[in-house]
Image (cartoon, rainbow, N blue to C red; front, side, top):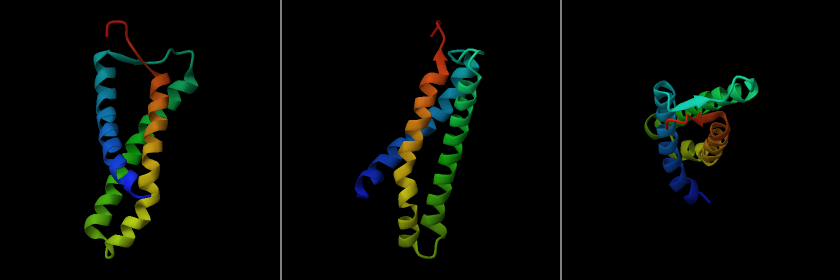
Length: 109
């Protein structure tokens, strides 16, 4: 039960960090753009998905550092984190789904 999240979460976390880095770089360079102005809900959802993925990744990293280095009882701290570790791939999947519809590559790419 805990084996799959233990393997999946570090991979998904690295994929999220790569996505969090690549999106602003590609937006700035013009290789990626937000959807047209006629879809404000999708634009807002894309921005909220980026903010949610950034916040979720930071919170997960902070919780893992706290459980690993500062918690008095490490095993109970890790068991308390188990639901969050299991839900983090779903957070990434939801954000990637919104990014798929909310971000478009330009024709020059």
